[in-house]
Length: 303
Image (tube, rainbow, N blue to C red; front, side):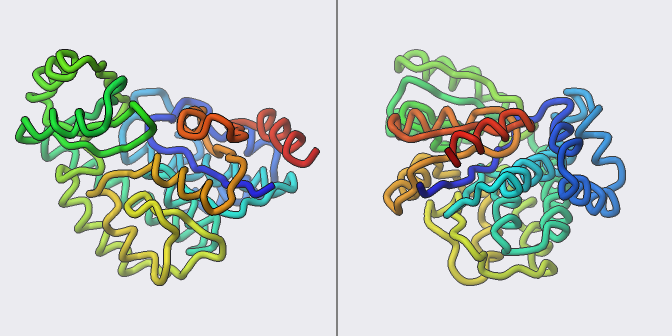
């Protein structure tokens, strides 16, 4: 059975994230120790930070990176190895590190910088994000086009498209969506990600990537921007990620077409697992967010 690991993205964060992996696995403790040397206080933020602290992008991203990579490390140590990986937004960085495109430490340092840049960019413009459900993508795109600064950004699954928009336009946008027969669900994020609102962050990330050593990963990593595996130097494509849409539905379908039969979400929550089930109703799916769910998934997969 060919398996893919899917690395959780922003919005899944919660207090206590990663602690059960840390308590159970020596490799995870080493991962956190190395990260602590780069960004002191991150371990405490994961385990004891409150929801307000964890919602700040510059805190969320380092914590999610470690938790995602911890979950994947535990699964590997339980005997489960993926044939391919992908990550949703922030999750693409731990996916690349897991696949060998860079060291875990280099990926963590890059994640810290990415979070700082995106937090700063979010402060430049009052923008937010919301999921639109119950409408075809083309209808949502047409509604977005009626507004100056509302953009389709995350193509999640059939009938679910996330938009990023200027705060002052979102009430009218919501009314237009409801008039078209859809619903709008606000997201727990601190900015308008994967859109032109992140232009300054994108420029800064390109500079940070130039100083980061990366190579073609050892296993296929599907990119958010193209829904295809990375080829060549990952830095060019990764540099475009935060200002362009996440093509998640296309990514999952492309993985299935390449022979992936089962998907394991590694990190926090089960958002990606649920999206896979909507995209591919017959696929085998597990969500691993603590040591108990990791052991249960590994037992089922290896049976």
